[in-house]
Amino acid sequence: MPKEPPNIVAEPLPAYTGQLNSPQPQPHSHTVLIVPHNACPLGGTHMFKPSFTPLGICLAVLCFPPGIICCLLCTKMRCVKCGEWLD
Image 1 (cartoon, rainbow, N blue to C red):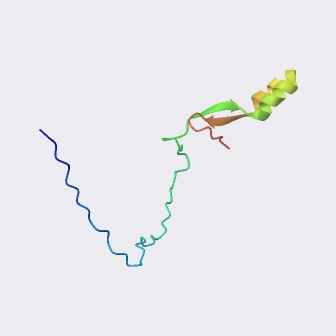
Image 2 (cartoon, rainbow, N blue to C red; image 1 turned 90 degrees about the horizontal axis):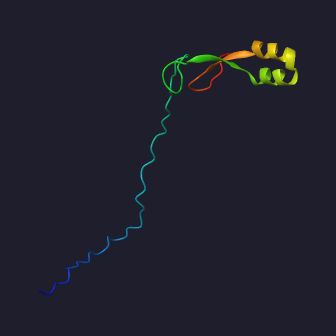
Image 3 (tube, rainbow, N blue to C red; image 1 turned 30 degrees about the horizontal axis):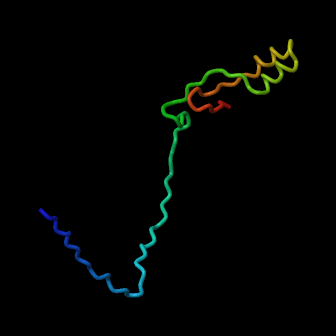
C-alpha cells in the first residue's frame, strides 16, 4: 500500500506594523530577610564549640613551650554548622 505525502499547509506571516511588542517595565521589588540574632544561616540555632584561633596556633608552633599556654588561652567559640566566630 503506497503512503500518501502529508498535507502541508503554509500560513502567511502576520503583517509587520513597525511596532515592537516589548514587555512593560516591572516595578523594582526588594526582598528583606529578617534573621533572628542567634539563628544560623544553615538552619536552626548555632551550635558552638571551642576552637583554637590562627594566632594561637602560630604562637604554639613558633614559641613552643610557652606557646602552648598562649594557644590554650586564645580559644574562641565557633559554630559547627556555618563556621561563624562568636565575638
